[in-house]
Length: 255
Image 1 (cartoon, helix red, strand yellow):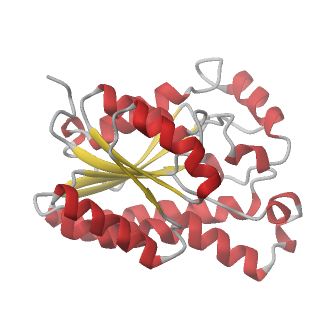
Image 2: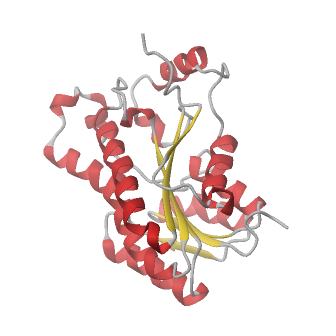
């Protein structure tokens, strides 16, 4: 028997085989979960669909998380095909490249709003539409980063958005606990992903983490997937409103 046998859920945020969300998907499927996936546009569909099909997924849907109607359509289709769901993985974030490369004080009003909308508010919107599909409870996990609690050079507006994301996790957890819906976040150390390519001096950050990490290396997709699997499973039935650090360097001095 797998840890997630009989469990069904949707993953937002797979872009390619290097995505953190893909590492999560692989762990969930290996534990027996049935998965649905979303993609942003046709270009990403060409990458996401083969990956999803390799895990025997039959539900692969378009979704722009900045559009409520798109999110609503995803959950409507999940309800039509499955009736209920057990979990949601929120692994989406975006900021304009210029707002990551320029000094934080030069962040545009539009860029700030966009980063907050896609990276933080989308969790709130997903949760709102997921609630009716979790009548017996469920688990929601989002992906954060150390820049939410520390000023990480080059992370800029994304750090502020991740801080809002982590705060949203706590408020949602407090609201939904009585409905047996748990909401948590995973904050992992830096991993080479498509999204990370937009962060300045990212390779330098990897080297710094290797030097300062208790494990003497950076965290892997597989390890983030395992941590997320734990939070989504019944093993974490008493855990909610938490940010789960996966060798992020949180307790290591930046001096």
